[in-house]
Length: 291
Image 1 (cartoon, rainbow, N blue to C red):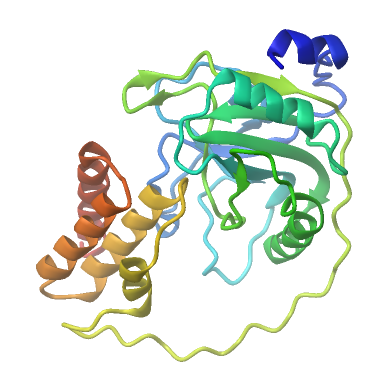
Image 2: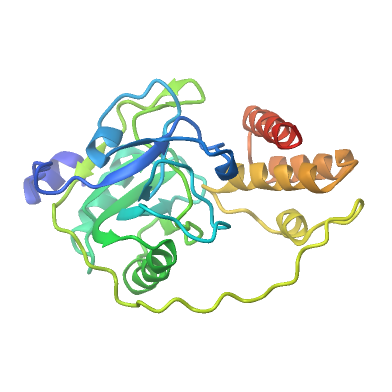
């Protein structure tokens, strides 16, 4: 079934921006460290989605003036008005036909998203939600919603990426990715209705984990896990950046371990250009932190 057949069955609604246009925060790169107090662009979702951006714009599911991290104790003036889910196609580049088949199927889901857009290796589904102002409550209820409505969706070749948390950056649809325009990727708006996902209002107590000892010559748990685990499509480059940054932060002589991490990235399918760019970014941020 192609796009024309789908639109004939379910005509695409006009997005009534005055009725519902959630706000989110965006940054020109996904390599933004939260403790650097980087200021992002807080704008409406329609602005982020429907502009041709001259860089690799990424957005978060929250609206706030800064890049937020999970490590901070509390935040003020942070709002969540959307939640996003990634549907990956197991490393295969999806075409228009598979995307439109997914759109067609989404109308039949128990929880139909408000809009969907095509990504390089899959699709992204976005839901409009009633405002939540606590990151932990958002994450708890987003996870509950995902397990109830999204995790059992089985549409070849797509599979849910369950790893996204509230701090995750996601690429906007119309950007310059690796110096290539993605300005013609399809976006399909479905409906304007918001969802109230705030069903659980209790925040569980945080476990008191012992501090990780970062000794020279010792592989911290995160690095060890990275080296022995197959990283899912859609998170490989971000994981590589985090692991490299952790390695440079924690070791006096990281060269051998860095070489092992880079080789792991190649085995997992990342291209040389992506690896080199990610490696340079990690070195840059590691050096800035030592100033």
